[in-house]
Amino acid sequence: MVVSVSETRAQTIPVEPPVETPVDIPAGTPADTPSGTPRQASATAALTPLGLLTVLLGAALPMIDFFIVNVALPTIDHDLHAGPAMLEMVVAGYGVAYATLLVLGGRLGDMIGRRRLFLWGLATFGLTSLACGLAPDAATLVAARVAQGASAALLLPQVLATIQATTTGKRRAKAVSLYGGTAGVSSAVGQVLGGLLVSVDLAGSGWRAVFLVNVPIAAAAWLLAARTVPETRSPHPTRVDIPGTALLAVSLITLLLPLTEGRAAGWPLWSWLLLAVFPCAGVAFFLVERRAERSGRTPLVPPSLLRIPSVNSGLTMIVPFSVGFGGFMFVVALALQTGLHYGPLAAGLSLLPLCVTFFVASLAGPRLVGRFGRRVVFTGSLIQGAGLVALALTVHAGWPGVSVAGLAPSMALLGLGQGLVLPVLMRIVLSELPVAQAGVGGGVMVTTQQSGLALGVATLGTLFLALLPSVGIRDALLAALLTQLAIVAGTTALALRLPRALR
Image 1 (spheres, rainbow, N blue to C red):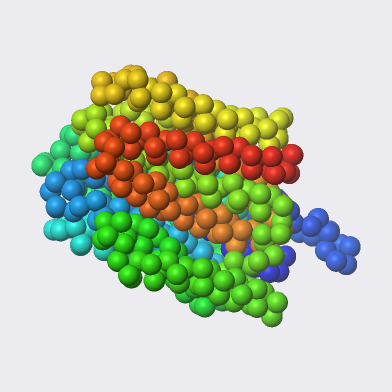
Image 2 (cartoon, rainbow, N blue to C red; image 1 turned 120 degrees about the vertical axis):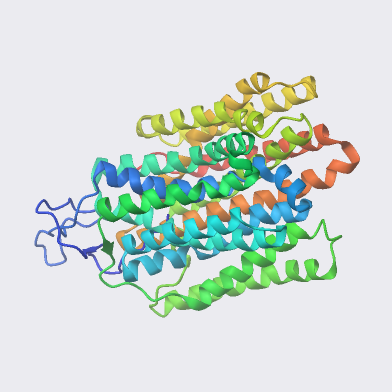
């Protein structure tokens, strides 16, 4: 998801011999040079349909793995005696490592080649998935999940960077829309696939199959990528912003770790100390990044980026959307299995209508946004809110006899609304970025999204688990759904700040 481009006008240079047909000038590149002479596009190998499918497969793997574990959590708890706090860390630990290192992964791709980092990312993702699948205890599983998140941060940034570097015009717009659809659909597919794998219990592997399945898929993607993905890199890659990266990591860890572990540990002193450090680390991060930008260096997150209207309004909406989405997936997976006593397969299949309608909406989004502009996001947010209301009413009226079919209408409505929001928001964030900031803008966008997902698990998950002993599973689930509904109401209002039309 992270793309990084040079501060010069040339976006990428080929590392392998280019094809004879030059690509178009990248979107947003000035047509003329300062001297007034026509600017020529750099020739680079175009991304073929199979190459696009390959990088989207590489993008789907980390996204699926953020959620695939959700339906396996009760089984993991039973087998490894994990406990609620460790279960949250299995999900959130992956997300924190993933979000913290995303921009760094993009910068490394600019420096040594995006295909090379994509291949390294696939290899390490497969190996860390194997480590997760073979973990003998909960602590080892959490450590392996953190390593898996770090490997995902090597892999995923190269996807959007490669798309930006090897496509132009309508092909780029279509590819970015497919990428946005992949981001959302993979989330729901992850839980459906996870439920299927746990219920089938291949060779007695149980929950371990949700990780082991990545190994052959990563190997196949590696072979395809080696043949179909062109190599690109920035002609003048920027140096890694070590202070910014370190402060971002401190900020995320001091926020997410106490929110995830504090409740189960009884809110000890260390949890409050970390929460007190968070605002200090956040302010320090901003000051360091502003100083770096003013001195002419390229910071991890340039503060000037947030002054671009599409970036500011888009990211402001992505944060609450991701918090609600990540928390919803975590809470629903637990509630359906522990409250309605669904098996893993039924819990996964209950999300299938959401998956289908999300995918359909994400495909229709580009055409709709070209005609209706930001009203697509506003309408999608309203539909998502209606889906949450319908789900809450279904749970309230039918508990504990709610069937998978009974959940289908509200899940379908939810997916339709979410599919009209997330892919369009991603396009909006990227739409007004100048070429010199397109890469870092994409990195900030995805870091924001992944941080929001992890924060959703930490906050809505903690709310659900905290209410569970006193009010029961149904009312704890309803409280989480109503909290998400309040978040959706806020995002609906924020949609009015989006640019009226997409460039």
